[in-house]
Image (cartoon, rainbow, N blue to C red; front, side, top):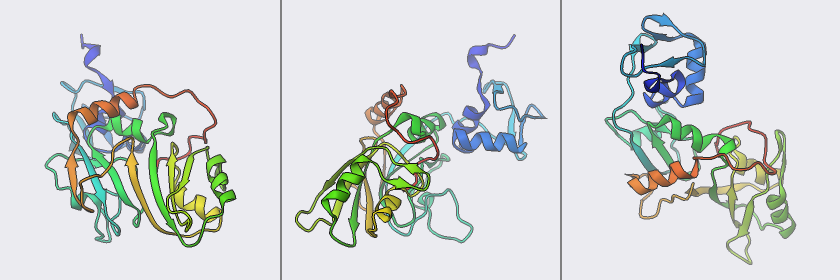
Length: 259
């Protein structure tokens, strides 16, 4: 009889094998391209034994990596956050050549710079990006004109967007009295959220950088450079996402981070 303690959910197996994030793996399963021991599996609740079952995706056998890899990249401009690009544009993967297959945790848009993590630990990537874990991020935005103090209060209290009002956040002006450099500390991660918050208040962002992700910064890294995470940093991230925070006034779980 199979030892059930060795079994794991199929989406977690695929995530740890580097196929996609856990949510992305669900989509792959539903697509009907995953086979376990020669049989197509589309049930999202399916479990596999990594030591005995043969799992293939689109005919290619996949394995759980024996070694988990965690990387912090200081993303430059004109670089997209995908594993590959049909148009031949530079991706974050071009900047982090690794023997182990890894993928970015969440997204930053092409012209947003700063901290982004890459890993083959699908479970941790899921926890870091899912809205229910409320992982904090800090952005510094340089805008096209002086910010009014009342708009700063709107940022803090919540900005009405087409997908709902944003959750309260911390916002500070970094360059008084010029008032064109604003820091935001968020626990949400809607699609292009920071840019849309400023656009809703009729400001254009000239420069946007994520300076902190889940307490990690790119200090000491030049733009485009990367480093492996220290063991204590990985333990910190796992502890940070070990429990779901109590729900307060937060936005609905509608998107993964992409600013």
